Length: 470
Image 1 (tube, rainbow, N blue to C red):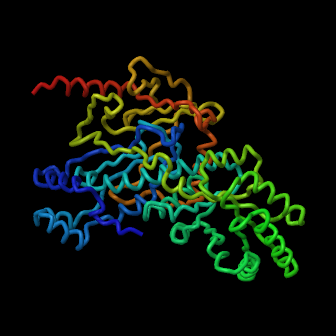
Image 2 (image 1 turned 135 degrees about the horizontal axis):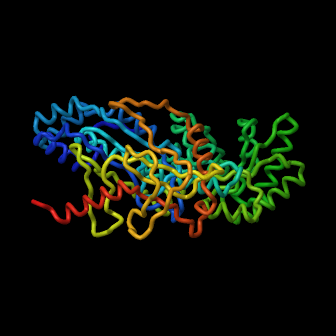
Image 3 (image 1 turned 180 degrees about the vertical axis):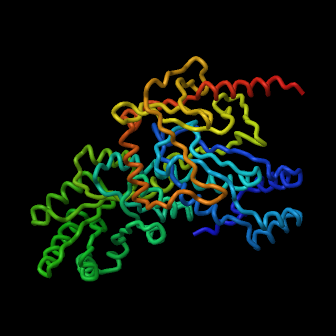
């Protein structure tokens, strides 16, 4: 969809890269952390998504002739442009698995590369991971409410331009079953689904003829939109007529779709009419500004809906619209680095790190992750990252390392996974998260703490920068 070349970045990345290059710092080793500070949707968790497309892009990320010509016009010097001509990402990346349940503060992905390489991929990395993680999380919330009902992404037309392409991918990871987005279906091997629009019915002089013609062309996948004129007085009666005609030919109407009105009331009345006509096999699909709260309400009302088609609120991540993921330097030239802030929560964690998830005896998440230095193996106590008076012992809990190396010298180490495999992993990990962290109202806060060694290192750097010797 998008030609991800070197100019898919922000100007300040190139401005910094030029300074690194000219001052001989281009090859200095650096470590950057990707993390976020707040779960979206006032929720208790986030689903990490976008890793696989990011790795695919980085393997071929380069500055092409068009990029170099444009940058030359922007005043970048010839020697720097020659450097960019040969630029390839050759760094190492450690990451949690795509589909993992993740939480604020914890490093989700870590880039080890030369300073200039790590800097030049920042914008691309944030663009891919923030958006797809947001949408997967939104989809996961809807899957929670929908139970075993089908969920279909209808959002391409409401998405912010090409964002709809990756939204369809992220929705599948979060638990959706299919998409209306044909290009995403083609490229990501997602089942595609679609019925008809009101315009199809309006183009005919009467609804019944429109239904008959559609059924004639689609005898094995006939889903009729019944609310163009009057769902219960016209749409359903005409569906019944067409269904009986199809039965006489050895075919069946697959379903109806409701796209307006009181979906709980209409679906119940539609189900009653269909059942009385002997058409209990006809499925009911519903659309029209659905989100997790509307789906929750419909399920609580026992609406006989078999499929939910979700558009706008899914693909734009309504109401949040963005995940606040950031990419911060934690080591440079072999030295741990820190960013200080008057806002305590914005003080970063230095050095390379590992994240340990605490698992209880039943195989479930205990509700706590310990962030440690990369070479630690068993942190026995963790401290609140910003409140010095809070700590907890990790005890005898199983400690699962979350971050694994996924690229070496710019080449990926992990095999590509299908979206079904990633979604299955997400489902398994979500099932290990206790319900109090998944509820919509006042979810329990998942604890994220730092080890003694990491805490001491951070405090040392804070003091060093507050009281510099020179």
